[in-house]
Image 1: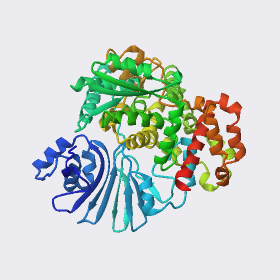
Image 2: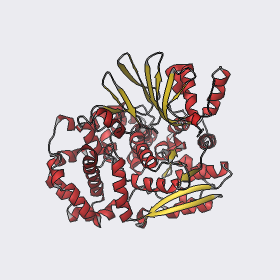
Image 3: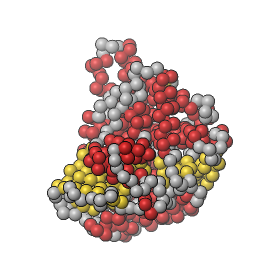
Image 4: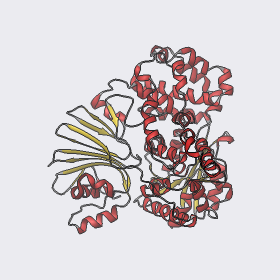
Length: 554
């Protein structure tokens, strides 16, 4: 917003006493600006950045509760000698920082800090997190002395003291008193409002269209709101079992006013993309969907500058296949309560989905794999994921097991994996991505839905699918979930094999002393490559890690 010189950064107020460096978008800035103008504030631009400055002048660090958007910013208050930094509620925009008691250094990417603060010591606990989760959760990074600001968190630095606190946690709205029709109407209102707000821009917009219900719903609302044709972008694979292009094409044909652009990724192009991506991944990250996300971002950027995306829909409505154990537990508990009410309280705790059961459906290397994989079992390697996440998981208040894993994923997997992936892939292509499902009012509404609103009659995302019934084809609403992943299993049986072996069994990789060569050689055996799909995920993690060492740490 406001591409003139008046929107340049860093930006200051009229007196030069408050300065800001800002990455993101404030979607409700017109309303905030009008209110601040009535309170006597003077504006020199039409930019949303300037609104944050005046909001801070008016409310101090409480300014965050007024912002609807996706953002990371750092404010320097000259008069108070105060640094104030914040990250948006869901963690859509990243913020890395370094603090040693004298210097505060910040950036949107870890590699931007390294020239100023050096590499320092590796965090081997974070390395374990990566091997298990495929990402490094905030506030940790691969280096001990560099931190990530968590989603919904802010910090201040003043008089040599750094303070960090959470200013927001999901506040699920209770929907128990609403009829199903009222919940559908409310969802329609909130989703429509979020998309309308996020279509505000001074540049061309488009949408990522996978052919799933989330992205198709966003495309439907965009077409209903905008006058111009909706530019929709999709990526598929030569391997048909992994390609969602037929569904994306069906959605594009069904929704009036959609211009559909589609691209097919070949194994050879995938190999080249990996090299490009590794150079931008300044800490280990192994969500394979970053490959098609980057290709789609690069493709879309040829036509538009901003795209809307469906991230968050699975977390909000319980759409992942790996939620099946939690769903079974909730149903079993419901049956027990109905038919054996006296017995139910006695077995309630034993029916809860344990953290270990939840983690087993999420991880690449299981915790039991680590002793066979790791060359040394230093204290920092010991169950880093369980030690940090298990108490958080078990203390999380939720109505049922499905609600618990949904809230846990919103606070961890969504912020540090999915949104990291989208940010890095899109920024590498100079494309801005917006995620309307993560409007915080919509998040609070969805996380407060009763179980029957999230799952009914074997139908996941029940309420969203009921909302879109008649608006989208049944083939999209009731299709099996595929997920946005690449055919690693097929690739690793073909031309990628030599690359894998040359990288993972190189003299340099062995000299690090991290992994037992015999275990890695077993993963690379023809039998494992040909029969074990999960084995491909393990190899992918090790490949990304070794390439990260070569490109950054070495």
